Image 1 (cartoon, rainbow, N blue to C red):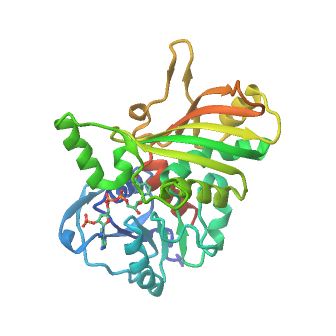
Image 2 (cartoon, protein in one colour; image 1 turned 90 degrees about the horizontal axis):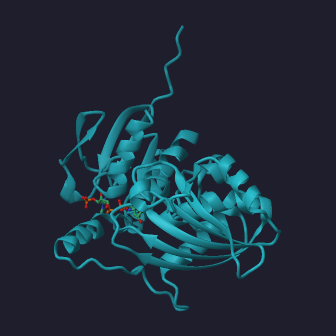
Image 3 (cartoon, rainbow, N blue to C red; image 1 turned 90 degrees about the vertical axis):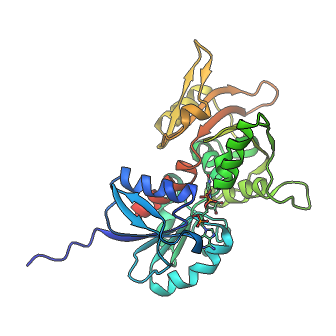
Length: 317
Ligand SMILES: NC(=O)c1ccc[n+]([C@@H]2O[C@H](COP(=O)([O-])OP(=O)(O)OC[C@H]3O[C@@H](n4cnc5c(N)ncnc54)[C@H](OP(=O)(O)O)[C@@H]3O)[C@@H](O)[C@H]2O)c1
C-alpha cells in the first residue's frame, strides 16, 4: 500500500502584496519549494487583487490559516502580533519577518547557516532577523568562531526598498523630481541617541551568534533601489592573518568573496541585486588598531535579508 505523499506543504503568506511578500512568492518558485496549496493574504484593501505563482493567477483572500502548515508573515510587527494567535490556534508554524517576536527568549531567531539547529526548538513561531543584521552576521559568524569578536563598528548604506513599498515609491518620485538624497535611518530615536535599527543590529546579532561583543552602528538610507552595503570594522580578541580570513570566508556558505583588485572594483548594490549570496571584499587590516579587520559587505536585503532567509528556514522545517 502506498502511504500518502506528505512532503508538499500548505503555505500562506501574510503581506503577499508587499516587497518582501512578492519576493517570497518568487523564492518559493525559484527554489521549487514543494507547495500543495498557497494562500495569499494582505490588508483588507487588497482582497481580490491577483498575483501570479508558477504562472497561475491567485487572488488575495481574507485571512484564514485553517489547515495551513507554514505561514510566512511579511507585514509590520503590529499585524504579526495581531494574527499570530489565529495562526497558532490553527496549528501552523509561523516564520515571521517582522521585529515583533525577534527578541522573545522563547522564539528562535535564525539565520540557517549560523544557527539552523535552533529551528527544532520552536514553539510555533520562528523569527527571521532584520535585514542589516543578516548581512552583518553571515560573514562575521565564521570569523567570530575563529578569532572571537571583541567589538564591531559598522556604517550601513541601506536601499530604499528596505523601508517597504512606500519608501521605494518615494525614492522613484524623488528621482523624477531630482531631489534624491541620503539621510540617517528614520526608525525611532532611542534615549541614548541610537535609532531602533542600530539597536536591533546589536541585540539581534548577539542573540544569533550567542556572543557578547560590543557593537556601535550608524545606519544610513541611501538613494539606491535595492541591496544594502555595510562598511564593517571588526576587532578580534585573537590575532589573525588576512590569508586565514580569506580561507574562512571562501569556505563559508552563502558568502562570495568578490574583489577585482587589478581594476579596483568591488561589489555594489546594483551588482548584488537579485543575487542570493552576500558579497565581501576590500578585506584589509586596520592600520590604526591591532587585531582589527576592515571589510565591505553587500547583499540583497530582500533576499538573504528577508525572503530567502525565511524560505531557507521553511526548508529546514
Ligand atoms: N523590505 C525589506 O527589505 C525588509 C527586509 C527585512 C525585513 N523586513 C520586514 O518585513 C516586513 C514586510 O516589509 P515590506 O518591506 O514587505 O513592507 P511593505 O512593502 O510595506 O508591505 C507590507 C505588507 O503588509 C500588508 N499589510 C499592511 N497592513 C496589514 C494588515 N493590517 N493586515 C494584513 N496585512 C497588512 C500590506 O498589504 P497591502 O498591500 O494590502 O497594504 C503589504 O502586503 C516588515 O516587518 C519589515 O520590517 C523588510
